[in-house]
Image 1 (cartoon, rainbow, N blue to C red):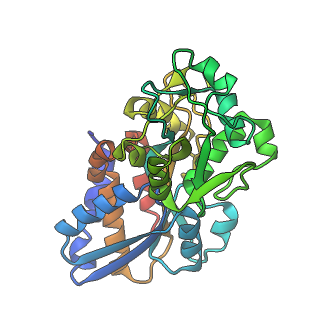
Image 2: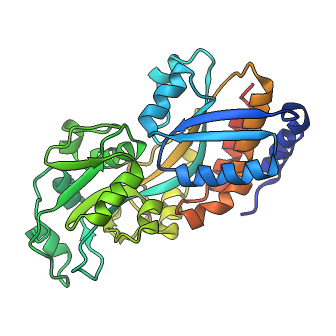
Length: 341
């Protein structure tokens, strides 16, 4: 990825602080979303290798718990796929700076070893599966969308998150945007009341593992987790009425043009992206930083770490199943990082 001169200038300014801010041992503790955890852990590994005086720990507890810990001040930084609400931000006396750090896709992974072709799920069918209306794999509406597939006569065993989850928010925000019934019923949230019988697991990894071992299962999970476990992923109908498979190309199409829509607080949701080639469930994932840090060594080390993630760290996105940030979004995020004092 080639970065603009402005991005490189900001990055160099932050790196110039390293001698003063990181001359001694600095420990940074963060917590939050499971969605971006593999990428953040890769960033930490690479950054620590190049910065012997900095130790970073990231506790993978889910977006909900990450927000709680950030708001109460028990971490140096948080991470969430839901970002922070205005109400949450108002509770943080030290101020808040949201940084869109990566982006990814929420996929519908399933376990049907007897089906070799990839299953298509229309928008209305997807809603009704999670509404408990469509309950069998060979339901007429699923069969009509997959005329060349012999579907098994199995009950759809749904799997969802049991912890407060930004992945759940991204998924249910999509369902709410395409279905008034869903919006008025379960709605969008990091935790929702599922209408039918749903098995639950903690974290994206927990959901993916439960799908992996459960015949007839269907659940929502971050793309990279499903890809690493080799889980089949449904082809979903997007806003343009086209069926699109989750991959890097459809993910980039979902992010196209979002930089121009990014508000000043850098909190932008994409419940139903525009574009013929756009995958329909995409989300940014945010790092949550305080506006002020009394410990300047921590502030400097954290700024350098986030700067690294936004620039050089983006090169690991594709291999781990994430969407590299558009250059324009990186520029906005780097500018936001300058607000951290």
